[in-house]
Image 1 (cartoon, helix red, strand yellow):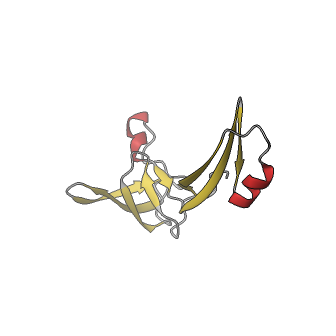
Image 2 (cartoon, one colour):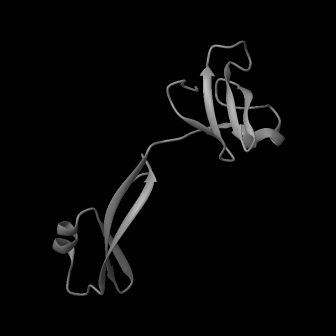
Length: 114
């Protein structure tokens, strides 16, 4: 179900504003899509489909999740790599065969699985 309090974009990346989620069936969600020349109105089903045809799937709604920045540390060995979420833990887990330790700053959607 589309939630008026969440942020959405189209499947192809355009910004979307949601105005209402209580419209008449089947297109209960009302809003607008931002195009290069301005905003154009749009209607979607309760589950975010723009149309029942495959041609318009690029206009389906996709939730925009908050982004998080995180630092991870990779201990690199011959044949494998271990991942730690703090430098202290990476140091504690390092054994004598370590080749390198790499600090990596990542930017991912919240809930990405890290």
